[in-house]
Image 1: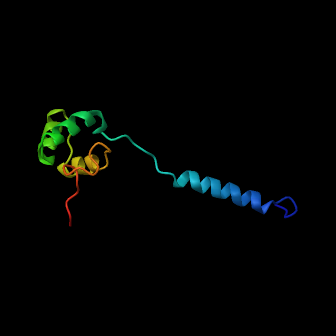
Image 2: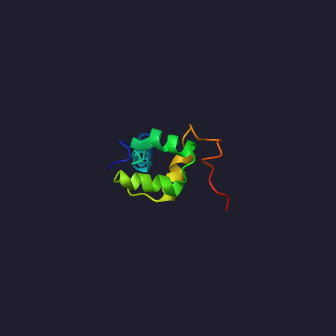
Image 3: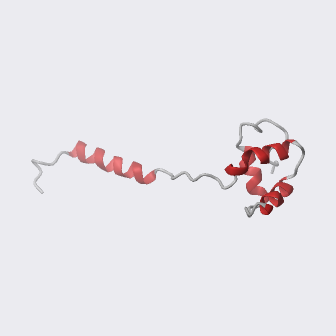
Length: 89
């Protein structure tokens, strides 16, 4: 390749664009999203995270109680409420 046809700023912007698309994270919807309203209602009525995980197992969704805890902690319905706070370490 000859240097008289080479456009460095254009090549650099193309490289950065390619790297940016590779760097993007893919978003996958949570398996718990289908049961969001039921989980929120059960939690507001005092269900523990272990009980919620057991309820999900009856729906053929095998998840850990900590997965349920992390999912509910991110929901706006429960943010700032005492029933979705993460335990202090």
